[in-house]
Image (spheres, rainbow, N blue to C red):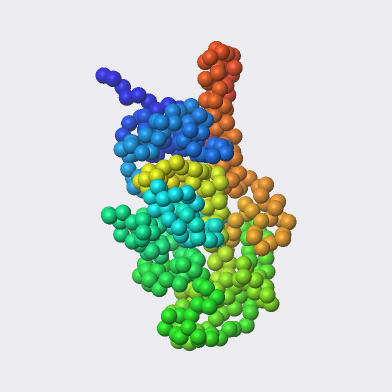
Length: 436
């Protein structure tokens, strides 16, 4: 009887993580390609194109392309498995959901759903593709849950049905709850905050929310010229996860006969009300103090951190694919790589003993803060990026061996090859717990 061919070993931490997904792939070759792509996406490469990844991990670029476009594995099964892994890590702890969209500039219209549309991260209308995302947040860690591509009306396929961004976000929230996550709060910007359908969907799902609105927003049942009443400003401390504080101000905005929702204005300067640091929000939280509202809404910036890591570190927009079914596979693989790094972030394990004080990221200095302590926090070994750097250091010997193998085979430099193999084996024998 012929035994099945075992998967090729790469780096121990990659191999261990990938085992959870092995049953999703029809053959060992596809599973090997999955591991090679995980390794390449987390590697320190300038661009995560398939040729660059193939060169770094000793694979064939055409085989990796075949894995993305032809291999018969199911994207939804990979997504469900990834969510199950996150759910196992989080357990029954309540999480905050941050919803936002991001766009990537793309030339031409060959790629599915590329159109001239507003790209929020660019801040203008341009040619590109837009996706709506739901990130989870818990005690210093943001992690991707779901995404949906936005399909412009003029680029719909015959089998497509037009969905607005708030509709896509509401669908994702239903799926997140169906996956068993315990959601305590939903945060989103003005696109969702001014959508009555999205607010109604959150009410139907019995989810609390804090949603941004425009400065001139007036509830739909009042005339657009209606002037609300502003209460007195209250000072509060915006508390960040490194313990630093920043002075902020908040006041309630009172609309006539508005009993279901509360409106607030938050700012860093009550005299100038600077546009880039003044927000207006509405929420169904009625028993929370203004300071709690202000701190909780500040968590929304965590999704921007997640976008930055996903794009600058993991190659979100480095694909060279045109069909969305293939792009969706690429994006799901990137989220799997993101979760791999999250597994090394031990604070999510320790969160059961943490307090419920809302905090924000320590990885970078707050946008509106001059506190030097925030810069010192960058060097702490407790951030998502530091875990990624440790993972890259662990993977470096294996990647070096893959890059040098063509030359080592040509010159038959057996001593160097043997030393590199021993180095890889030594690194693989290290414990997988963080820190690496």
